[in-house]
Length: 446
Image (cartoon, rainbow, N blue to C red; front, side):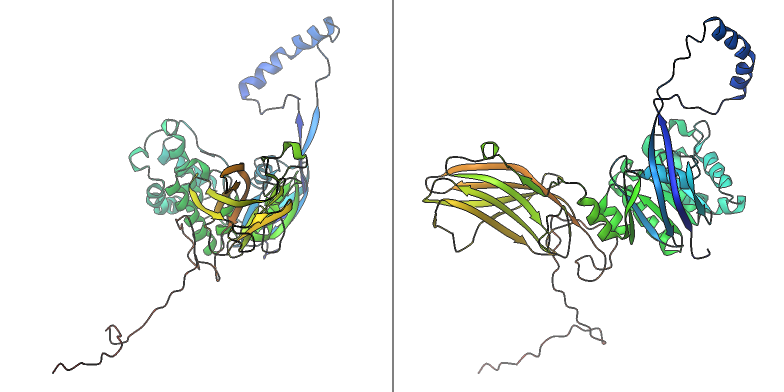
């Protein structure tokens, strides 16, 4: 057991929906309930239990038979679509709620950040909340004193540290909550999708801090919908779907599985009914798809591998010169590039009636990581006419990787840019500190 930080076996959680949930009563509510109970029972008897109609009581399993082990020092990403059971899992591991069946064993001190201001008392100041959270985690006063300035500096709330947190903005509460959770040296750090609240600079700080935590042998369990953050931070991924683990392994493989879940995918667009397909009198679009290096339709491609985009179309009227082309946009709406069909087989050549497939290949280590959208277009050149324009016909995501074979290499922090080419570098070294130059032949002028 010493080689396991978290052991989960057959963990399941059932919720009742449509039925009023029991809450923990206050002392006052308990006393009032005892006092009025006899009168309520008498009233029900007099009404003949008229108000005793059955309440709607449906159940739903948020998690079903979830099992896995996490070793000390592992950085594990938990992914899945909304409603997959990710937040329920973290609440169970954080002991916020109890499982219906199964169990989860945790070895080590746990620090959880599941929502903005988790564990904060709104009436207390930031300073008081730091010490309160530390005490709850079992920290000694001396240890809290030693870490306090570092926590406040990271959170960037120095001016407001003695102000009640109820007056903090959501961003300020987030910064302080994360700073406390990450700096109090937990053996296990559990973080839900709270980083989306912060700005880009703070998100980078959080990512860097979680990487530092992992490097010091602490365990990190990170839930996010940001696949770039997951692949950069975590070596292992766990994919949940409908409350069950459907994939567990290397992050890249799990992300690829996640991106291709479901029958329909944005990497494939078809028009089975020709009457509904985009087109004109000359040509009509039938299919647009994104293919990975293995030739499979895929929403997610490794940054190191080439990606192909292809369109299938029918030429309805022969003897026209056609120009298929794609426009690629990133998630910020920036026009990354356009690519026109330059196949010498069909360039400036009139096309016969029939079925065509035009394909372009984008090399590996060319695109930046992120989401990309493809506009699919086809022109008739002579006379000029537009046959179809299909904005956002398909989309795909380029997944970053750290290590050999990428432009990033071992650099783990943010890299900007619209493209991410892997370019050739060379470095020269001279031990005497002088730049090495090729010998120059002296020319004598007579």
